[in-house]
Image 1 (cartoon, one colour):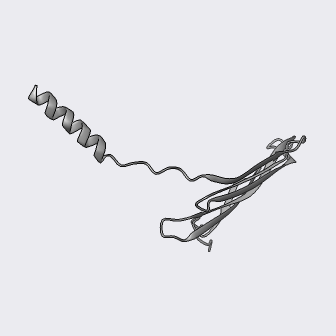
Image 2 (cartoon, rainbow, N blue to C red):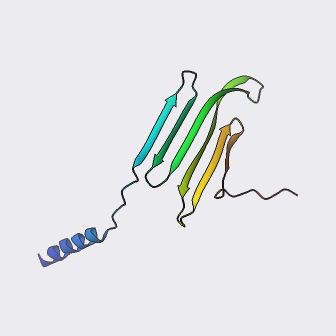
Image 3 (tube, one colour):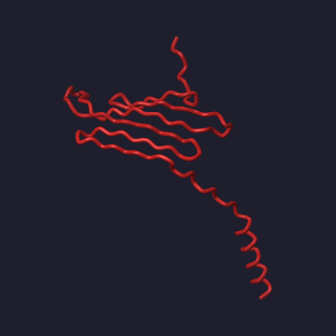
Length: 113
């Protein structure tokens, strides 16, 4: 019986010592617009300064066999504060050539010689 009481008290102590997860930041602004042709734009901002904006437009492109097909060209940016308190902004676009991002926190490819 004493072992069960000690075990129960140990479980209670362990539960009390567990870290409490912080509450996620609240969204203070959110918008989304969808066009009939498939184009869209959206954005949101949180109370801790995270901000994201994005839009997409349809575009005709050629595939590997030179056949036309429709792709969505996406452009956007997001901003956040890093662990050191520096505000970081990343701008990006994605199309038939892939995803391309630029910002101080994005590693740069070495220059070709």
